[in-house]
Length: 72
Image (cartoon, helix red, strand yellow):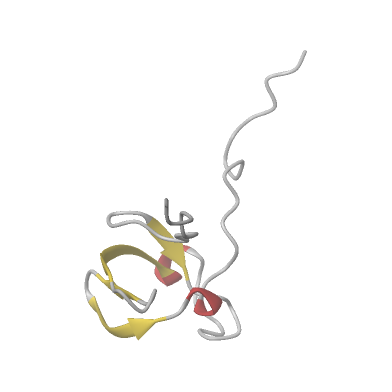
């Protein structure tokens, strides 16, 4: 019997941005960090920022952000 694949919201070295409500008055660039480790409890530890964080601490990932419209 195969186990159902679990949803993994984060991967090591992926960039995440803290929600503005958590860091008010701080620019998007200053709220963006790289994931160091994904823990078994689905929390993450970041490079150069102490603590463990849940998915809800970060903005939803927008894979299209920064991409230009390729349609002509």
